[in-house]
Amino acid sequence: MLPEFELLMPRTLPEALEMLAGRAPDGMPIAGGTNVIPDLRGGRYRPACLVNVAGLPELSGIRQEDGMLVIGGGVTVAEVLEDPLVARYAPVLREAARSLASPLVRNRATVAGNLANASPAADMAPPLLVLDAEVELASREGTRRVPLKDFFLGVRRTVRQPHELITAIRVPLPPATARARFFKVALRKADAIAVVNGAVRVDLGDSGFCQTARIALGAVAPTPIRAYEAERALEGHPLTPETIAQAARLAAEATRTIDDIRGSAAYRRHVTEVLVRRALEGLWSRE
Amino acid sequence: MQPKLITLTINGRTHQVALKPNVTLLHALRDLGYTDVKNGCEKGDCGACAVLLNGRAVNSCLVLAWQADGAEITTAAGLGTVDRPHPIQEALADSGGVQCGFCIPGIVVSAKALLDRNPNPTEEEIREAISGNLCRCTGYTLIVEGIRRIIESKNQ
Image 1 (cartoon, rainbow over the protein chains, first blue to last red):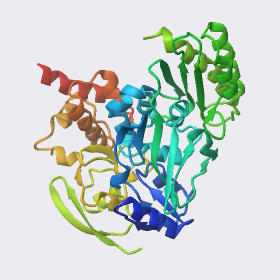
Image 2: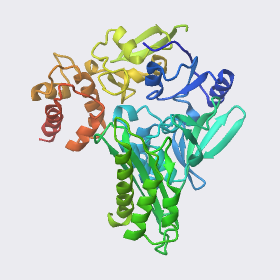
Image 3: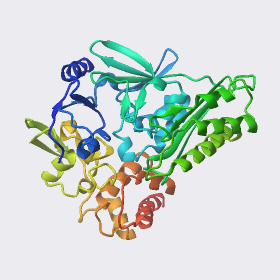
Image 4: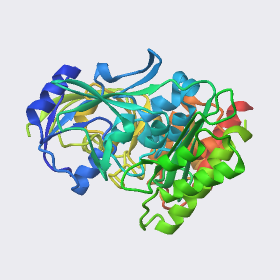
């Protein structure tokens, strides 16, 4: 049995924002419920009030707008997996969506919820970090956009205020010369929380030198992280076995791994280096 | 925490039922007599409570009943009965995929969702489709075999 709570059922976004503002800090948005409901049952949260934001028309759909891919705050992971715009412009996000939990969960879980929940192992975070995504947060007072790299504060903590709702995730359309890849090691192939996950993105432009390099890692620190030093080791250089090895070493150094039931700190660190190296090697070697 | 009257269309039959906000769809369904929907982990890990919610396979333990107000729900028993089984149910029985049986309603629902979207899945796609359904008899080989039989018999 779930603990008792009040459940508000807004029909529009303005109504939902009004309710969140009126009930802050005791109100909590619920969409797919795949994290919220187990957390209520387990006692992690005891909100007096839930505001149901699943099905709000303003939060639906994935669209292309002014050079951005805009993923609505209510879009499920299953919708990401099936979307032609994502397949075309952000296949790295599609790869990650395919590895998140199980089809039963993906049909309910939203991308926004995966970010808002702020698990260090959130599978949607690394691909969105390497894509330079922004989180759109709306409240009764207005809308602000936060780069995803500045969104996470700690384990299950983000810059989202209790009266704010993620209304969209905005991804700049990457240039055609950029390539990206997702990676994940877990204790089984499907429906498993990452021991280490991550993504890399490199834009070689026409020059053969890395114009942009992005490396993001999950489950190796209190939040999903960017490996900035490793990125800098690539930018301005060609992708060679030496630069890749150096970037992979620096990526492992960026981690703050811990021991838990899924893996040891040392294993996570080691695997990070291997996975980053393989992902970078694979960008141009495998078609 | 006042109850609210909601409408659930389950296996083609419409129910109006007054429920409190903290009742999950799983408990709403079981209390209405749809006990083919099994209560396993109540965490979204085991898939025993899977149903089709407006055509999509979901864990009913992770849906608040109020969120399903107005929705169409199909349970494994809504797909077929002992007298008139659905081809998926028949294939699982014939293949020996049913051991204790507790996971099977959820497996049937996941298999139905898979075949509705992808009539010719590979073995890997079948395994992926039922990855959210745990069989603690660990009888996955014969379950996958059963689902493969449906595809093979359709292709003959």
